[in-house]
Length: 163
Image (cartoon, rainbow, N blue to C red; front, side, top):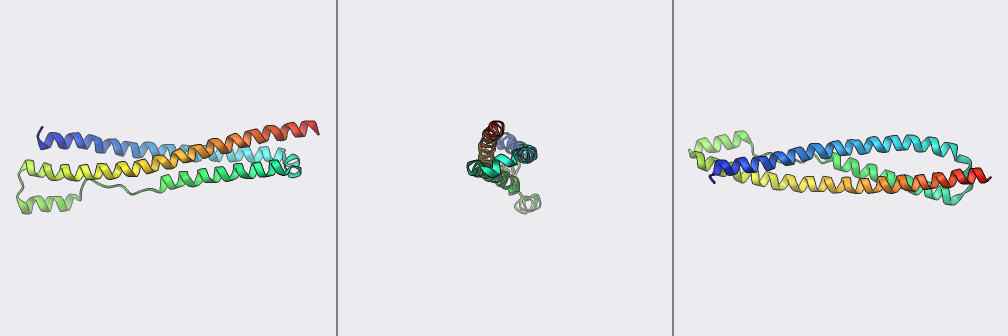
């Protein structure tokens, strides 16, 4: 396999990481939408259960914990979306000047590009892993926060019926 074929192979890997970046960004946006929708529903539910919640410290603490979990989810989602560090294959202007100055052959040119794309792919993979981990934590906090909230809402509704 010559350098040009190797470059094409690595370029596909590089493009895969670019696509992963887009997918993770979409996932983060969806998480924020879910949280926003849930907070609107939660506000309505707490308003309806305000009498039970204000008289029961366990419910109050539980709803507060649910809110903290959702806030943690928002923080992790925003952190994942704020990671903009992304490494390009190379600085085109610098590489063209270097190739012209050194009078590289085609094989040498692809060797340089191959080294740059391998480095960029490795660095971008690490960045995408960090974004994915933040989104995993965010999804866990969404699940915990909403589950706790739903359980507490049921308990509050039952308490309202009993009283």
